[in-house]
Image (cartoon, rainbow, N blue to C red):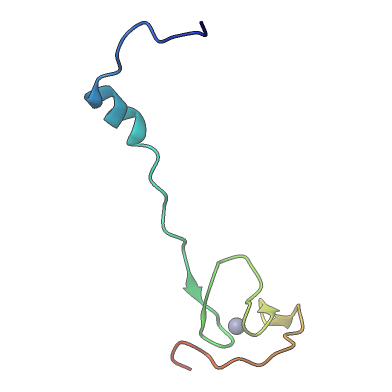
Length: 68
Ligand SMILES: [Zn+2]
């Protein structure tokens, strides 16, 4: 027989362990160029700029989902 827990884990202790398992929401900030929401410290996936410079070339033009 394989290794087995010596004591039953109570529902309270199970909940205490799982209190740290929640996923945090992704932080998004508006792009200064096109105003779409993007992750901070990353090039904008919509317009391809970072800190005012063109980093990547966006091949397909998509309409901005946010206010622009
Ligand atoms: Zn942008």
